[in-house]
Image 1 (cartoon, rainbow, N blue to C red):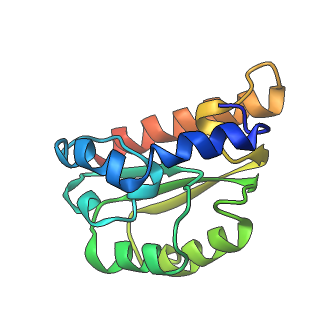
Image 2 (image 1 turned 180 degrees about the vertical axis):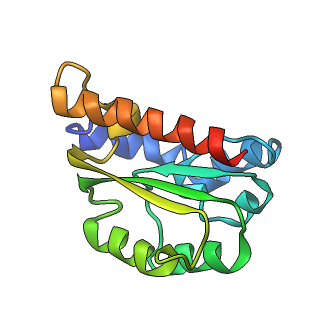
Image 3 (image 1 turned 90 degrees about the vertical axis):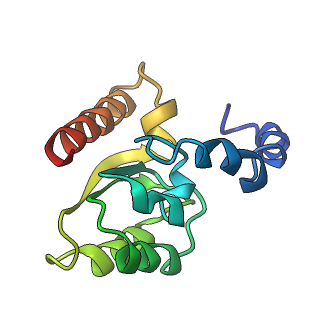
Length: 148
């Protein structure tokens, strides 16, 4: 997906709503992977550890508050500077909900200069994007290794 071509994204998005993508994920409730937008939903409660990078379309503060009140799955959020889906204000609200030992373990990694999608679509020819993409991967591996 090219983030510049919004018409392509709109065509893609129509066929990737929760009605399309949720059923196959529900068949694999024990899996450690899935769409970031589902991290906040109820099925994550069965996971042993959770990582979300640049969450898409979360309802803030409702989704993190629901996760906080219903899940005990250790949570890592990989966030970035330029993210229309999970802006800095949303990161601050997540920290207010989970941080200061309110939810343990919780950690939020921050990748300066990166944009939404950096963990999966980061341009590895750009040193900043490459560092963020590799950093998000490393942080996820360490998180799962330490919490599973």
